[in-house]
Image (cartoon, rainbow, N blue to C red):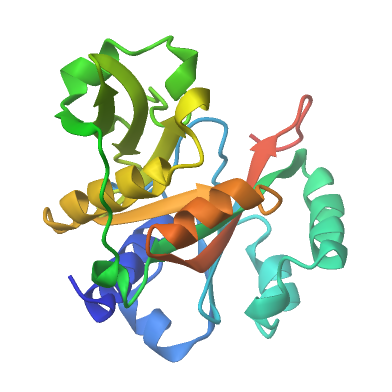
Length: 255
């Protein structure tokens, strides 16, 4: 899977996520659509469809409740997507959302396999073992691997890759089916085995396996988590998109 294929699949997912047509995508840099429940979209947990923004290589996919869509279009239709996550804009957006009983839940930066992904090679002295969903369920509650597996019904854990040493699991990467076309990767390495490049080896190997299925793996982390960001880049991923999510507040005005 080359980067052009990855790009096409990712955009297909974003169109599902934000109820966007391909025709609109071809015409606009900022695409604003009413929120709809679309099969295969990435929505789960606390995330609310009241407002969502995805900024991807200079384009912005945005969806929101129809009751605020005209205000959102007025504010963002000509907005430069590159600057959407400036604190001043997010602060102003949050105040606007609070007027309707919502607030920003989170912003995240996400990584995709880069053009030179397959040039990366990893060697490890540990045995690597793939885990099916049944084996993943057996690890539920194991706090050592809380980043690898999320156990979210709307984003089921599909595959894992464990690093084993003397019959002990010392690291694990996992992927959840967040959307129809994209699976999110998380990774954990136990404390005694960190600093050896194992997290990168697990992430890269699992990502390559996922792409064999025609699915695009992606890696998300907090902007301030430099160790996690370094893992993504060291695994052959590049920073590719960011997202802004919102949630309902207590006593919200709109449903």
